[in-house]
Amino acid sequence: MKKGIHPQMHKDAVTTCVSCSAVFKIPATVKVLQVEVCSNCHPIYTGEYRGLMVSGRVDRFRKATEATKKKQEEIKVIEDKRAAKPKIRKAKKGEK
Image (cartoon, rainbow, N blue to C red; front, top):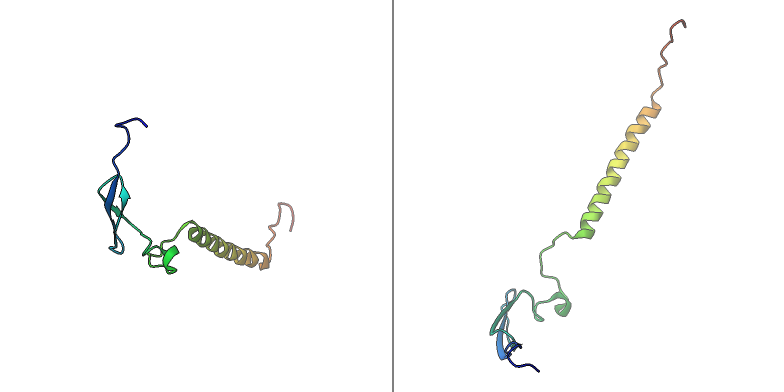
C-alpha cells in the first residue's frame, strides 16, 4: 500500500441521527457525522412509517389517469347529447 494517499480512519467517530437523535460511535473517515435516518428510526427496521405522505410518481400517475377518465366520461356525455338531437337539414338552392 502507498503511504500518504489513504484517508485517516477514526475508530470512535460520533454519528448522530437527525430524525430520532440517536448517537452511535462507529469507524469513519471524519470525526463527526450526521445522518437523516438510522437503524432505530428507518421504516424497514421498525415496521412503521413515520414520514410525510409525499406523492411520488405512482400517485401522480394515478391522479392523472383518474382525471383523464373523468374527462373522457364528460366528453362521452356531450357526444351522446349531440347524437340524440335531430339533425336539421338545410334546403339547397332550387329545392323547396
